[in-house]
Length: 231
Ligand SMILES: C[S@@+](CC[C@H](N)C(=O)[O-])C[C@H]1O[C@@H](n2cnc3c(N)ncnc32)[C@H](O)[C@@H]1O
Image 1 (cartoon, rainbow, N blue to C red):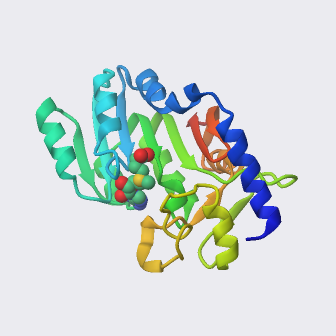
Image 2 (cartoon, rainbow, N blue to C red; image 1 turned 90 degrees about the vertical axis):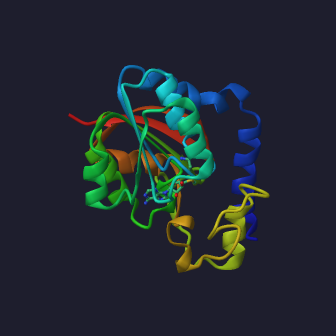
C-alpha cells in the first residue's frame, strides 16, 4: 500500500478516534429536530436499518413519512410497520428514475444517507434529491479525508490498482465495502462504492446542484450535511 496514502488515512482515523462520542449520535438528533410537524422522506431506508430512521421520524411527529429503496421491504420492516400501525408509505424504486421521483413526491424534509458514494453519477442523484426537497435536505455520506493542499478532491474507485484500493479499505478496517475492501465488479451496480468524496467536494456538489449548505456534522470519514434549496 502506498506509504503516503496510508499516512493520510491513518491520520484521519486517529482524529476520528479522538472525537467525543456525542458526535456519533448526530443522526438521530437531526431527524428528531427536523421531522417534527413536517413531511419527511427517507431515501435509501431499508438496508441494515429496516425503516428505523423513517419510524423515528414518525415518532418525532412528522406529518407524513415516505421511505424509498431499491430493495423490497424486508420482513423486519414489514413486521415493525404492522406492530406500530405505522402510516409510513414505502415506495420501491430507483431515486434516479423520474417516475419514482413523481411517485415519492416533494417532502419538506428529505433524509438521504449512504447513497451518494454508491451512485455512478452523484450530481444526477443530487438533481433528483433537489426535485424531492421542499425545505431541507439532510445528506449523509461516507467520505475520504481532505487531501492536503487539494480541496474538493474525489477519487473514482472502479479500476483502482489493488494497492491503491487497499489504502481506502484501510480507512474502515474489517468493514465490507464492495469495490473497496474487495475488487469492483460492474455487476455490483449500486452496491459498489463508485466514489470516494471529500466533505468539501460534497458541499460544492450540493451548491452546484442548487442547494445552500447550512450545517456540517461528522468527521473526515463520514459527514452529514444539512442544506436547503438555494434562493
Ligand atoms: C448503505 S445503505 C444505507 C442505509 C441507511 N440509509 C443508512 O444510512 O444506514 C444504502 C441504501 O440505499 C439503497 N439504495 C442505493 N442506491 C439506491 C438508489 N439508486 N435508489 C434507491 N435506493 C438506493 C440501498 O438499497 C440501501 O438500502
